[in-house]
Amino acid sequence: MKGRHGSKVREAWVAVTADKLPQGWLGNEALCPVEFEELFEAHWERVYGVLFRLLGDQGEAEALALEVFWRLYCQPPPGRVHNLAGWLYRVATNLGFNALRAVKRRSHYEERAGYLSVEHASLSNPVAILEQDDEREQVRAVLRQMKPRSAHLLLLRHSGLSYGEVATALDLSPASIGTLLARAEREFEQRYRAIYGDGETHASY
Image (cartoon, rainbow, N blue to C red):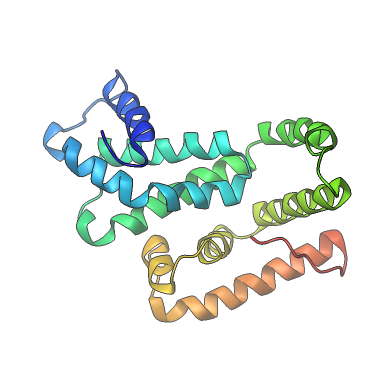
């Protein structure tokens, strides 16, 4: 498989062609290799980007992004020509928020925080970097507590998706996105201030 993401396409191909196909999988529903590769090349970066923005962990974001495409290969959604991107982002955000809310992530964050000062010791302003990283974790903590639709709205919109793409991903009317997004931003601000005080956050969603 050629292309800038060829190695990741091969990883995904190993994942879907080993012995992991689910019972009841219909072969005639599957994507052909060429179609799958084209879809992977077209959507990998943004799917991975959404997950990395949410989780802040490259390895975990890559693993979940591969899981998204594994699911795409095993059971493509009906009408995929028209709503495939939305389906991919919906699956990605569901997987990402499930991972974010998992209890096991607490120990991961604590362990990661313990290495930050060493990891960034050679940089010019490690204190600022530590503060920035802490703020991102605060943002993730607030997102975990929000209503799922509101949290998904913020994540997708601030990951660069258009109103139309967000609407497709969340099965909403494009005309409603502006209003719902404003409500989600107010909810985020209220929850953030309730937990961390009146200070502003400069970290992105």
